[in-house]
Length: 196
Length: 381
Image (cartoon, rainbow over all chains, first blue to last red; front, side, top):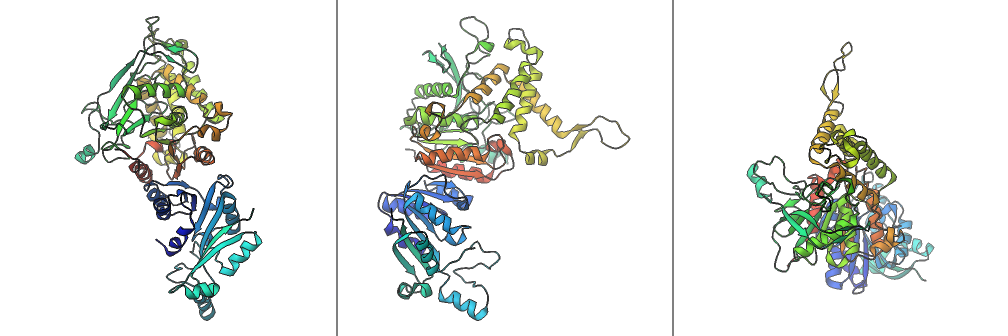
């Protein structure tokens, strides 16, 4: 299980209804079901992933997130999760707004492009960073909308989204990441809601 | 090769007939005093009787879905790709029931059967049927087989409509509903194609206003034409292009020659049409296309599919195929969106496939993999 997912399990109330956007092979939803008794639905676009998730007894709908969530009623889930997919959306701002229309709460995780390694790479080499963590080159990457921790919090402020909690994962220890997230967090994790 | 495929076949099967003496009141208000349903079963019903799957057939289908009737049978049942040991509907785990619907012409009571009141074939006097009549008669068959609750009811196309109707009429009698390449109702274009098919049959001079059996005739040309029209709608443009293209079966288009030309696609359609008219009853075809036309899942729920699905409590798997233009993916999405809005449990995938509507009968690896994965997690004792 990816580290960011382990961090967010505790934000899911037992027995709650969870919508996982870009749920992959459903491992996270399965864990939520098994550990938290959560009733999960996943959205996934890749059919091989979808088949693996369906095989775990999960409800998975094939859907393109860039087309929105219009088919999901307002406030029909307790929590909507978008793990490591924000940066691949055509309209991250609209997806964020949709998440908090469909769910009472949202959980977003993304790779922080403000991480010092990204900055160093760009500064010293003058080229877009390629690393083990972000292995794509600029022209073939699905990650078309990178942001930093500060960028994301700015977007939340603009949209009137309240940050209930945040957590940061660093490359090694997370102590530095929590102290100076915009510089040291490799993955940023947010628990969000929209005040009524 | 032959051995390997045999190991994945249900083998030789023998149809059985269930006779029903309890009158069945139909949606049209008329009553069928007695009737018979012919069916086949594959696999074994377990002691808890919780591993039964009902397979509902499509427009021109029948009870023979898997295996062969004799060792000389050239072709296996119509859904042999999906039913058998180790196949998506795994007969090692499930007990599969496949019947010929009421009104059919393969052994169940229908227009070609004898009307007990007159001693003559029913012909056009056979009562019109709705999808719900099939569902009610299938429920009687379930009773006869001692099956209180199906592990799953599965159908493609018109079969998918039966599966959905099951979920609304008998919500406690199925745990899973698998709806493949279907729709909640026909579009005007769908209705139009069905009308062309019926007109083809009804305008055949041998149709005799539906009394062709009495007259000792068969409206074979009309039936063949109806099937040809239908068949075009089952295939995609791409599938036809790759299967036939503009290939000639005979003749030549060379300048200076006047040899008559026959395209491959012409010959194929004629073959399909004539084979169909040898084996299918014209009145049944009319009855089945009308049942298809009249189906509207949400009509009695204030035309609100969300309200309709709120009556269901099973889990759903909905599948569509990218090049299906008879029941395109958008129609399946309407089903899925209504289920989501009704907060029912649903999985959905649009399978990339070139084969058009007919894809639901084809061994498309991604389709079979997903179908299998879903059924593997269906609990049985």
